[in-house]
Length: 479
Length: 112
Image (tube, rainbow over all chains, first blue to last red; front, side, top):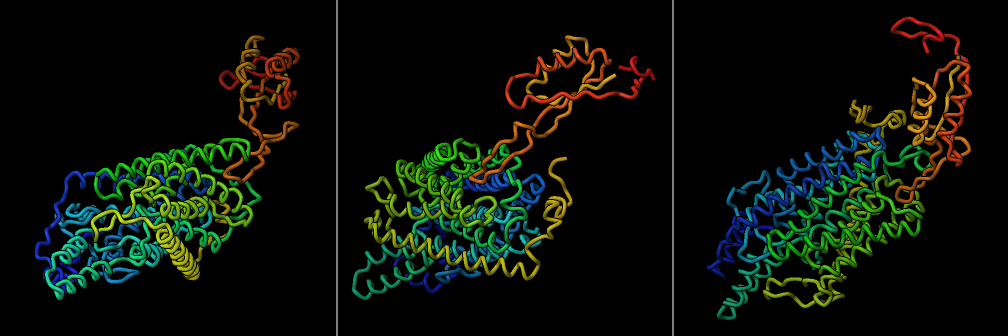
């Protein structure tokens, strides 16, 4: 999921080894169709966050906190984009370690208009710049998702400080661990060099070079975890950060006693539909090429979403007596979350089942578990994103099985789809889930506490009652 | 002179207006209000969080009429606003001390 350009820029020793082993290391060609699709997908992901997520969340809060919710989302997008181009992309998508990359591409050093970036196919490239932007929008939405947990009661200054810290210490490492790898071209070239080596000494040398290329990847990537578009990186990550956030920030004044009904489910509906719309860029764009496998991800993004919306709505109808707008759109979002890691790996019918299961599980967490424990996860980031992400991450491990209509996992060394092993794949998926939960859960808790010590998380009770629109921003959403 | 004030169900407003126009009442003030009586409220559920909504939306109408017309007005409102269900509303009548038409300066009965 990254380019092989760093081979030239960052690791000359490895390059020398490669060149010695395989002189014919052809530069991949940049495909215009893929480039056009990836630019489109990038703005689709931006639309998910602004205005999609902003309106989805905004409609769910009380009218006195509408603008505060909108600005917190908008701020998060802008600040994350800036950090991404300064050092975020470099830390995430360069080699250097299992847990975090280096600074060799800080300030986007070395990324020119025609610099090729790798895709998932050998010899096929997109400009690295479009990969930088595409991934930038992922970082932005992940951070913004957290805001729902602590909505209506967290000072803007606290959010302003928390977001740069969180994206740096939590998001970049997890994205690096799951998504950074040397890329198909480097692996293919090194594997071909091994095959082409004539004598034992040359073979050993070429094998060492291949091992080095294979070792150049994130910890979870190398563990075999598969996460197509961000089940763990985006949803489990933000969901658990939100849960510890709402526990540390504390409940909204009057939670459980006063009316906290959403102020505009119309806006929530519009926001949810924009999320679904943009999610096609998120999932199908994660294919990095406008090819058949992108179509699979596109199709799955339709099916799982509709299945999960229906699952949630009908369960609600049966259990609570009425089908609701909020239930149906919450189900749609949960379905989008669950299919995110599976979108490029599962078959269409696998996605249907995944959506139905995610609807039931997320409904149970949002309506029952939350009330049983009494935490004030205001807009259900944990119940929908973390839980939906876990269902998706584990479901991906099962549904990738070609016997269930999945794609299998491509082995770039053998140049074919690898054999499916349920135990090995599920072990890797569990590892992915657990490490994300621990890293983000513990790390985010430390950051929330740190921000509390530095600027304070909560406004005064009077200011919270008045509403953050007036007290933080001096504006009113509706007059 | 009296004010006839009625609290009615919102969807009955047009029928009440037609009935009052039919008996020659040419002015009416309408206010959107909330309140509760025997109808109580209802429950709203958002993702499992239940809220009891105690105050229901109603329409308040006020008609200023000559004392002799009060009975007719009450009959017209009652006839139009009645559904027979709980929550149909109530009518209150109270006296007007003095009335002035701002444009002309006419007073009392001439101002109605």
